[in-house]
Image (cartoon, rainbow, N blue to C red; front, side):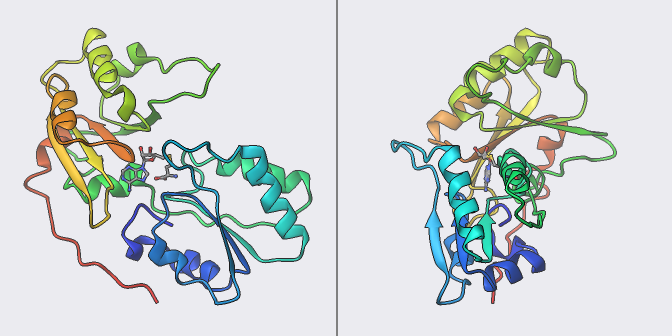
Length: 242
Ligand code: SAH
């Protein structure tokens, strides 16, 4: 579905929606895209709401398999790119196990495209010759993110799903050697009309984001490219999909 701005869906993604019998979608998907489905299309929301119990992954897998086995053209609609922290890979594996034919339609990930809408180029010849995208939230039982190693990296660091630990992440990166003056930003609802962002440094970002009440879904961006945010900010033209 892309990161938010409906115009950022791909031509292929839009055609899939327009020919779907069933759409199984997440919370992050812009409702204007779902509205493009044909009248007969069944819409199933498997999105995780705050304060509600998420639908277990096994149940989502079952829905996909059941609908496909009933002969339906099923669209699994996810925010951003389906293979960037979207469990798209896990779901596709289940389809393979059940012999269900599928196609992956890549999308514009918030982890790259979302930064642009806040005026931040993910790389820049003078400021960042590479970037890393990591999750701030590792699943239970898994190893924690290795902030010591991440603190040593050059280039732009982009953290998804990190907002509940923003203060801790900034503090750890400084503890392991990044300068407290390293530019950093939070972008909430990137590329959506309700986008809000704040820039600061590793030292000031957590407090600034809290003061502005910024929360998930949001991107944390760390690196010198953040300094371009004001210069390169722009007003998007919102494209109507049809
Ligand atoms: N597949 C998605 C990422 C899913 S993980 C993609 O490629 O963009 C969910 C996390 O992605 C959120 O917690 C948030 O950190 C980030 N995210 C997704 N869409 C976002 C948006 N429009 N603005 C800011 N962050 C977003």
